[in-house]
Image (cartoon, rainbow, N blue to C red; front, side, top):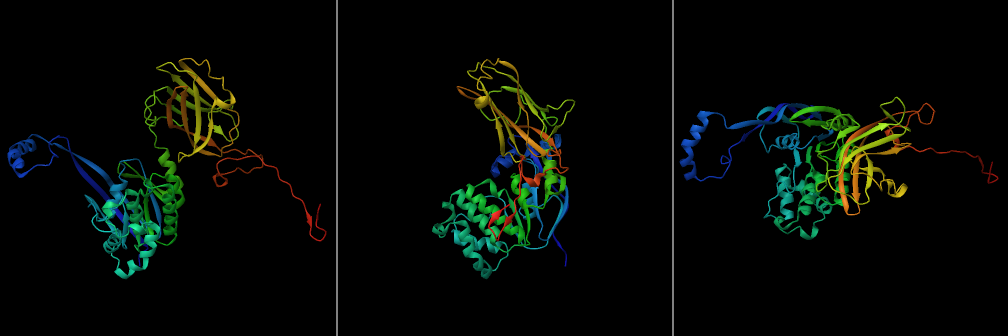
Length: 426
């Protein structure tokens, strides 16, 4: 028996994009007859359509029990891939082989009929997945308990909120006995408690021997749940392998220039409503004759700015984040040097020096914030990457790694012997 769960060979999906404003409008038969001569003439005089390949020459294989994350920017082809694997959309070229029953959760309430009750939709979804009624009944109580919709089980789903839809939809997909589970952005909707339950359930599913293809922008969830990952970029596979390596490749796909330096005048991560204040940002080492930043060394953040309007009592903050956007530490003169920026000019360069950085080796993100007494001026989240290189900071020949956390601190250790018979220490 084959150990494969999914085999994808030369997969491609092409869409025709029309650039005529009227071409995609809803038309009656009368409209079609009237416009028929115009459409024939349009075909004769040249192409009015553009081909767009959402997926191009995608090939990979997944083994039974493998949990694979699919990552990439918006529009990379992730959802298109899952729709094809779910047999919702046919491919233009290529072949897909699925060895087992497929369960999918592609968006809120996929496959639910709004006029049916929650109870009826559970049985409907199970039947669509190829489950027999006794199998669905066996898992019914677990599904209802997870979804927390007992009070509304016999209410038509058209009266459910989006959160109730999501809870029930995920519960059905995760609890029914499908050999292959396809999940697209299930953590993008729902409250924090529901997301925690989803992650725990996904972890249980991952250990149960089922094959899971998990699409998400939550890189922390991808790293926690998936042993391998697939990176899509403009419809092609840009990387495929161990999760951490693929995530690193994804983070390296930046349009902003070299690591540690960025022109932020028109940065896409500028928070809406901000007034462009920062123009350039860079991070560099304090070590002489060194362009790299190492553990335990000093680091300087340099920010070039130009204010379009006068400001009153300027305040600036610098935040170091991890690759998932989680805040690690913030630096601001508000508490340490409140007078530092009192007489700041309308334009210039300011520097924030951190004499000793105790972050472990790896890549990090930088956020810059400016405000005054009137409120926020400018904020750019994750405006650049910078890398900290490993170094033997303790002089023992051993370098702390990612398995030890995010930061390192010096500590003192001592050992005392204890005499159990006398009950004394020595």
